[in-house]
Amino acid sequence: MLTTTLAGLISITAAAIFSYAVLSRMVDRLVSLSVGIMLSTSLLHALPEAFESGADTRSLFICLLGGLLAFFLLEKAAILRHSHHHEGDGHHHEHGHDAHEAGKAGWMILVGNGMHNLTDGILIAAAFLANPHLGIVTAFAIIAHEIPQEIGDFIVLLNAGFSKTRAYLYNLISSLMGVVGGVTGYLMLEKAGSLIPYVMVLASSGFIYIAVSDLMPQMQRRTTLRESIPQVILIAAGIGLVLLVTH
View (tube, rainbow, N blue to C red):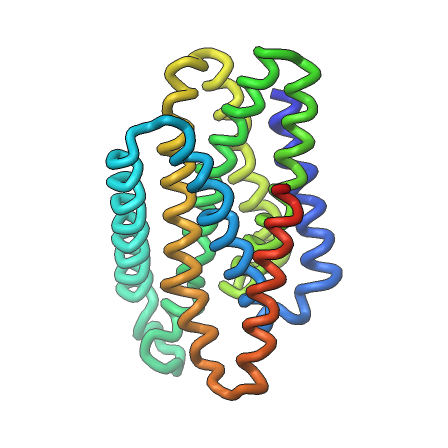
C-alpha cells in the first residue's frame, strides 16, 4: 500500500511540476503532445501487453469496442446533463458554450487514468509477492512510464478548463485506484491477474477515444501550414517520449 501510494504521488507530482512550470503557458499548442503520448501509450505499450498476455483475443477486442462505446455514451450523458442544467442561465454565451467550458475530456481522462492506475497497483502487488526487491524495481519502472502519461493528462485537464489545483487534486484522487489495485492484487492475485489485460484494454479505449474524438478535432481547426507543422512535430515528440521511457 505504501509503495502504490508513493508511486502515484511521485509520478503525479513530478508531472505537475514539469507541466505547470514549463507547459502551462503553451497548453493550446501542446494538446498535440498529449495526443502523441496517449495514442502511443495505448497502441504501442498497453494494448500489445494485453494481447500478448494469453487472454482470448476476441474477448479483448469486444472489451475494446465496449470501452469505446461506453466512453461515447458517458460523454453524451455528461454533455446532455450539463447543457440541461446550465444553458440559458442568463449569461450571453453562444449556444454550447457552457457544455464546452465543462471540459468534456477532463473527467474522461480521469476515468481512464483511474483504470490504468488500477492495473499498475495489481502489477506492483504481483511483483512484491514474487520478491520484495522486484516489487520496488517494478514500482520505479511504473513511476518512470507514468510521468509522461501524467504530463499528457495534465495538458488535457488544463485545456479542459481545470485550474492547476483542481487538476492536481483530481489526478491525486485518481491515483488512489493504484492502492485499490495493490490491495486487490494482494488479496486475490490469481483472479486479479487474469483481469489485468481487460482493465488495460478498457483504460486504453478511454485514452484513444479522448485523443480521437476530443483533442484531434481541436487540432483540425488549425488549418494553416504554419500551425500544422508544430502539431505534427509535437505528436512525434509525444510518441518518442513514450518509446524512450518504455524501452
